[in-house]
Image 1 (cartoon, helix red, strand yellow):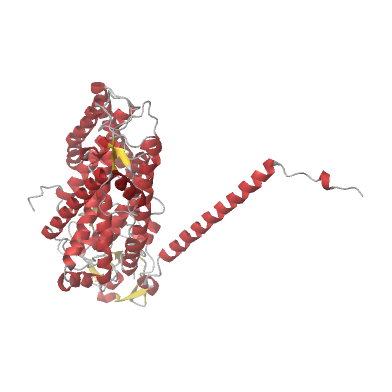
Image 2: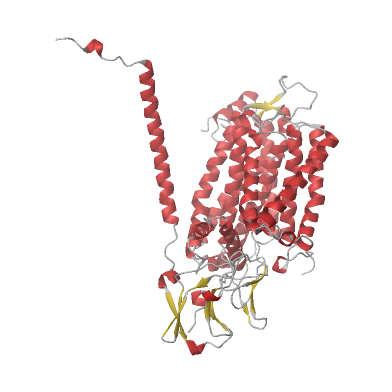
Length: 170
Length: 443
C-alpha cells in the first residue's frame, strides 16, 4: 500500500487565512443578519394596523331624496362630505386637504371648501379653485342601490381633476 | 473610600483624579492651554451635553405622569400643570432644554465648521455630529405631538403630510409615520415609544462615540495664528482644575438660564386636539419652518425631497472634499476666510428676503413657462436660478478676496446657513393667516 499522507495537499498559509477570513466574514454576516431581522421586526410592529373606519367598509348615507340638489352633507364619522351636484349626481369627497392633510370645512355661503391651514380652495366637486393644493380632493366610491346612497370609505381614489365619469348617478 | 481625594490639591493628586475617576476617566490629564479659552469653542458641545442631561432628568419625571393615549394625553398634561407640585416647571425645563438644544447644536455645527475642525481624524466625527443633530430633531419632533393639543396635532399633521410628496412611496411613508391613514392612537404610542426609548438611547450612544472620537483626535482643534509654526508644542495645563472648573461654570450658567426661561415663559397648552377643525394658520415646529417656507417657493418634490436631500448630502460630504491645504484651528481659519464668510452671510441677509418677496408677489414660474411640467417650471428652473445666484455670490466674493478651496467653501456655507436662518425667521414671524406674508405686530 502506498502511504498517501504525504500526497495530501498541505494547507498552505493562504488557504488558512482565507478560511479564517471566511469565518470572520460569516460571523460578520450573521451579525448583520440579526440586525436586519430586528429592523424587519420593528417595521412589522410599526406597520399600520387595520383602520376601524377602513375595515368598516361601506357606510350607508341614506335615501337619495334626503339630499337636496347642489348640497353638501358632512359625515364626520366617515371623514368625508357627500355632495349632491346640481344635476343630481353624487360625489363622496374626502375632507383631507391634498396639500398637507388639514381638514377642509365647507363654506356654505361661499359655496366652496376652504382649507384653513394654507388657504387652498376647492369647488363643490372637489376641484382646485386656488393653490397651494396640487390636486382635487380624494374620492370614495359611491353606489346607489334601491334608492339608498352607500359610500365605500374603505377605498380612496386619488385624482388630479374632476371628470364627469367620477360622478355616481341614480 | 473613593481612592482619590474629593478636592485634589497637589499636581499629583490632580492627575490621579482624572485617571481614576469614573466620570473623568475619558478626559485628558493635560491639554493645550489655548484650547480652553471660552471664545475658542464657546463651550457649545458641553452645553449640548448639559441640556441632554437636563432632558433625561426631566423626561423621567414627566413619564410618571403622562399617559400616551388620545383620550388621556391632554388631560394628563393638564393634571401635570394643575395637580403636580413643580409639574409645570419641570415640563417647562424640558421644553426649553429641548428647543435650546436644537439651537445650540446648530451653533456648535457652525463653530466646528468655521474653525476647520473636520480634517483628518475628525472627518468621521463630523458625520457622527450630523447624525446626532438629525436624531435630536427626531426627538424634538416626536415630543411635539405628545401634549395632544391643537398646536401639536396639526403641526404633526402637516409635517407628516410633507412625506406624501416623496415620489412613488409617499403614501406608504405617511401611513408608516402615522401608523395609519390619520393621526390617532397608533401615531401617539409610536411617537411616545420612539421619544422615550429608541431616541434617547441612540443619542447617549452617539454622544459617547462623539466624545471618544474627540479624544482620539487629541482634543479640540488648537487655534494657531497664521504666522505660527504648528509643529511647535503648545503650552499645556492640567485638566483639573483648569478645564473642569470652566466646564462646571459654563454648565451651571446654562442651567440658570434654562431655569429663568422656564419660570418666565410657559410652554403653554392649546385647546385639546380636534381632528375635525384645523387652525389657521397651521405651522410646523419652528425648526422645520424653513422647510415649510421652501414648500411655498418650490414644487413639493423639490422642496421636500431634492433640496433638503442635496443639503444633507453636502453637509455630510464637507470633511471628505479635497482641500489643497487643509486649515484648522483659528476662527474662520484665516483673515481671507473671515472676509469670505462675512461676505457670504451678508449676501444671504440681503438676497433671501428679496427672493421671498419676488417669488410671493412677482414670480409666476408656470405662467412664464407654460410648456413645461410643474416639476420643471416650479422646481428645476427656480432651483437652477437660486443655485446660479449662490454661485455668482461666491464668485464675486472670491474675486474680491481670493482664497483657497476651504476659504471659498466658507463663503458658500455662510451663505446657505444664513439663508436657512432667514427662511426660518420668515416662517416663524412673517407668515400669518393662510401663510400670507405680513408683519409680526399686525395680527
